[in-house]
Image (tube, rainbow, N blue to C red; front, side):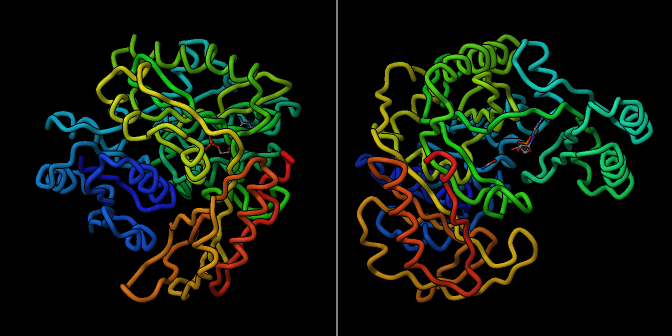
Length: 427
Ligand code: AMP
Ligand code: GLY
């Protein structure tokens, strides 16, 4: 069976590694992939098509007898790639455009949660500066901090936690006058600040049944101790002990089941991956955000912990019958440490030569997933902010972290930076 993976990050590299493990897969194409997927060889190869070239991707899939397509990032889902492929009779993992609004429109997601009684922060929606400013001006001081969000996709950057009224007013002016989030903030959600700790739960669903991966925790800030700017994610680990069996039961009962039932009842059954970003406060979960895909870097810990076959489960998410396929997790723990270019998430330089000690590549239970890398047939160089993601599995979180950091020490490029405290909170 031939497969197509869409995307270029470490998440897609991890998908390729997991799918290549199925002996039934013949060719695995990645569009556009990265330096790491270029070097995999064997059945895996890069295709020079970008994630938003929907018509070209469909044409490529048809011409290359692709039987299943997996979408990594959110932009093609928002653009309707699943609708397009399905209309052409092609199998593709992910939600249709109307269902992907759980991620692509925060206004849709919040209103949906309100309609279905799903726990999330109280909110208001604003479409213009004047009404949002008067709302912020009239709030009593104890209502701060406030969270201000662009409704549309913003590559994880469209959220501001305003600590004070002044900060909220400044942010709203920047959004509506300076258009810092562009048209993604034509509508803005202002919501209550939630206290607690964050974790993520990932479901794979065929619209009716669902299966859960192990819960994970991301590290969004660039600096150790969760300081500094937000990034795409600097590391992750799974399972996250914060998500106890009792918390998970509440997440399934109060969030996942009503979400799937609600999406079906409203006429756009949700299929593919559902990423539930949670705030957990004294054992009570509420939704911070939904994503319509797996997370990056969470995928790099969640997929290596799947013991059963990923390809079979993905096919079942498209064809139905997900409740009947094997879906089992390994015991133990996984951790991933992201190595980034110096300067990230602000401006950074690219084209730095990357050297990986051969011992790193041979270490058991360690996987190096590339993101911002390019391979010219001879050299591997940096080409992005997040450069690679080093995953290790172990019997315990401590062991997986030790293995991951040992390997990080064997990888070099100018300006490399990474957090030294991934997973520290859970030890
Ligand atoms: P989002 O893109 O909605 O996931 O928001 C990005 C990050 O902002 C989240 O991972 C949280 O750390 C933070 N955040 C978002 N909404 C809230 C909230 N209501 N309360 C506290 N923190 C939040
Ligand atoms: N790691 C967060 C995300 O993928 O959105």
